[in-house]
Figure 1 (cartoon, helix red, strand yellow):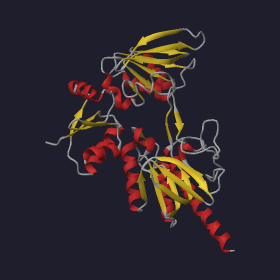
Figure 2 (cartoon, chains in turn brown, blue):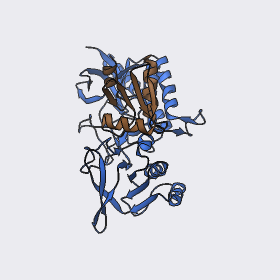
Figure 3 (tube, chains in turn cyan, brown):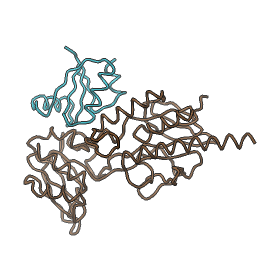
Figure 4 (tube, one colour):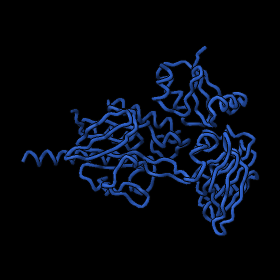
Length: 76
Length: 310
């Protein structure tokens, strides 16, 4: 199982963008749809202190939003 | 020093189309952009881009991107900090501390959502304050939210949020909604949405996250508070021109002034798409303007080399 998790909502264009970016880079990830999984949604809000998707986590590091520079940094 | 014939700032429909046209004209070209696709990424259903019937924004961006890659246009993914003309050359400074030099430049940096500029907005950004209801709406299930604005985006946003939020307070500065009649009709049928005409949000308050908004009635200046956990700001768009100095002429909307050939007041500097003063902000218009700007840049270089040969 991958240590990269992506929190998304189905209607979020930036979430699609993030997932495509990871697929292009060949990065395996788990996806959590926070629109249907309320507990995970709250876990995400608690971890980041923010109510916004997409969120990418790896261990205790996270990136809110689609920011390729920051994403590349924590994926290294 | 590496000098490009053309530096394109922005990779939305205007920038990517300009890139393809410039390469086909044989110009040594680079696109510098914070992202690929710009505002099209935020659009769900596009039904008026010719040749595709119905397509979502992400898919259209991918198709544009594929075409840019096929033409081997160089793309540098970084934000632009400043653009300056010195002598005959343009110097573009990026966030990744690189200086890119070009004989011509096209600004296609698009627009971004306008902010309210009220206390609490920046502090609670992503902590309840959002500019994308289609993205963040599901995170506000069962809680009250505010939507600020009275146009199509605001009303669509309120209708979207009705699927999740317990109640929606829609605040419109004007005394009427400027959204399309069909949307206003839907809004009136939706019991969860309370509309406040002639009202504006003057402060966003909370602790760790948004807890309430202070609202002011425009005519009487009377203020009251409404408890909400989310504030969705949908008050229109502002051009991305922060990296351009005052020498570049802009209109009252801060759009870069262009003539019908996409020329700005600075020789060799062009602008295309939503960031420019061209009327009507549509994907198909932005793409067409991008094409036109690239051809104009090529003609500008041609005339300049003719002049120097004489």
